[in-house]
Image (cartoon, rainbow, N blue to C red):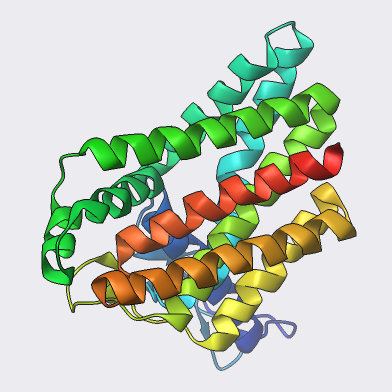
Length: 284
């Protein structure tokens, strides 16, 4: 196409916005089953202040940097299910059933990957040594410990969501979004603090985010939590999530020698359940 001059065109701003968009897509690729097309096609390409036509992003996704957007993915996968549940409750559907719909839809959007990680970590409790425990984690079959752990955490999450709904639909929607968002930021913190035990698996392949990336993930998620739950609840559940994250990280370091992808999934699930329970207690 003929070259056009745009005096206001700012290549550095465009590159910055492109990187943000690219990181969000990379995070969605990691944490959801939503189909994401890569490489990204851009409507314009800058060169020396000129717009030269369509550009193509051939770079590989920067998965380590994309950790900052994990909280945004939590917002994305929880907002619609939570609002749908609010509509169902308004139509007379029991709060417990509506809470189950929320959990099912979020699991559908994410492929149940975090639940799978939690179950694998629970199954590893039957291992005799770190190597055996890692072998158990890599086994796709779920065992008795995994089943018990998954049911226990799921029931705690389900009951907490239903209890929040009994106070108000707004409290339920805010609580679900807050917990889903901040619990995914905890994954970034966990990955910064703890390397995986082996050079295989998703946690190793995604790379280690910088402390700045984890801080941005936390701050972004905290802002979202404040919007939906208020200052006090947001900071309290963040503290609770941090305690769970640190405790689980120390346990997994001693148990298997590090935090792998399953450990990150368990971090999300356990911190989310703890956050929802905290919000339920605060609601009285």
